[in-house]
Length: 116
Image 1 (cartoon, rainbow, N blue to C red):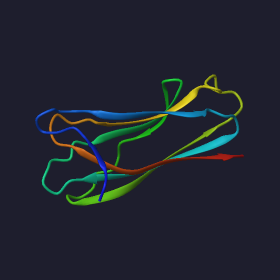
Image 2: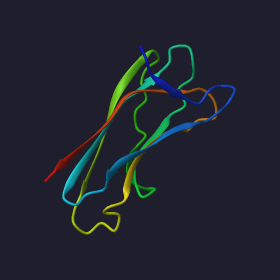
Image 3: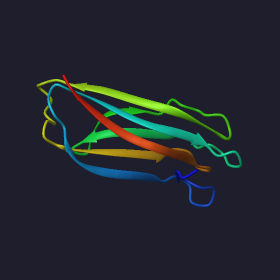
């Protein structure tokens, strides 16, 4: 299996960030999906997964707590109307570990945009 991880016992918290070429569009629903994992031989730190527009968080989640040795799918959905002041701003994905020790594993991150 290939996956990324952030945070370790020695280094503490960490994160990954990806700025996208896409910009926030009106009348669009965005669906951010990823798998959040708990390594069997390490502490799960917890996480904060966010979709940003122009550096401002527009949707996030941190509710999953997978059992050791497993992954759970996280789905974060946000619908954007016509009045958001962030329309046209560059989208980005941020995933951070939030605990003092341990790590969170991340796999198969995707963002889907559905025009309404």
